[in-house]
Structure formats: C-alpha cells, structure tokens
Image 1 (cartoon, rainbow, N blue to C red):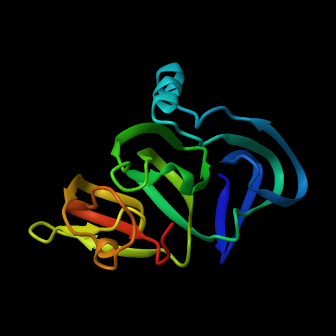
Image 2: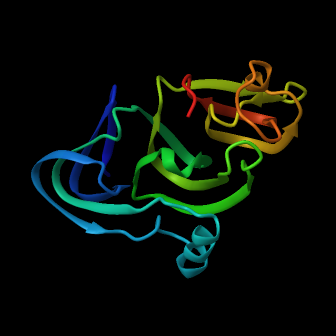
Image 3: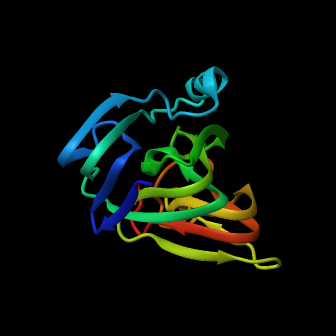
Length: 205
C-alpha cells in the first residue's frame, strides 16, 4: 500500500509496486522507477461523474503515479496535511486535493453557489473508502469539532474539508468581510450541523 507523508509543504508518496493518484502538475521530483499516466477527471463514478464535473465547472485533473520509489508532490508552496480514512467519507473543496491512495473513490458534487460573493460555484469532491488523502491549505490546516447542538459557522473562503455525519447549509446575512466593507453581492457563511470535523485554512483566497 502506498504511503503518504506530509513534510510541511511537500508530500512524500512512497510506492512499493502500487500506485497513487495526484493532482496534475504537482510532482516536483522523484526517485526510483516510477511511471506516470493521465488518470482522467478524478476517477470513480465514470461518465456521469465527468458530466457532473463539467456542470460544476470543476478543474481537478489527476495523474496516476505507479512503480517503486518516492514521488515528491507540492502545489503553490501550500501547506500539506494527510488525512486517514477508515471506511469513511471526506468532503473536500476540489482544488485542495493533492493526492489519494488506491483504496479511495472520488466523486464530484455541486454544493450550491458561492457566486453570491465571488462568482464561483462551491464544487466539492467526496472521497470515500479506506486510505490516505493529502490536502493542501493556505497556512496550517485547523480542525474544528462539530457536535450535536453546537453548530459551526465558517467563512466560505476559509473552508477546506469536512468529515463525519454533518449537513451543510448556506446562511445569508453579515459575514466578517462585509463588516469591514470588502466585497460586493450578498454575503453569506457556511453552517455545519451534526457530528464531525471541519478543516479550515487561516488565510483567505
């Protein structure tokens, strides 16, 4: 089984005759005998998922890296965190996925419009199964707990990923940024309820 290890802003993917899927263009170096091929639009879900991705304006393109050796992966000098999944589900904003190991399936969903403030869609990738998923964030990723009766509200620009049994809804009204007079359009935040963990980044997009 391929092993992913984060070293600040670089991900080490150690392969022993197996493979790992990584964001296209993320490889900065490798040692050993590795080969690379295009892995399509995220893998898993087939044609329907590919169509959904186009509707969502998705841009996640993965390459498959296989063989024996170590690949060094990085993206825009962003921090890297490895999340372990054990027959679990992780929802990640697609641009934050750096690499996934073999036992994980990716499926893209369109989670509504962020367009009220920035004109972007909120397209998320659902990662399910058992394995490791490497995620990038602008600054060290911060895990925040969500528990029953204690919902969590986060700024859409800070949100990176979430895991557990949670529902997400859009809350309109005042955001932190509209208080300081930045940005136009309808301000809103993301509200999470249930039981789980939400990962945020300290810097805004």
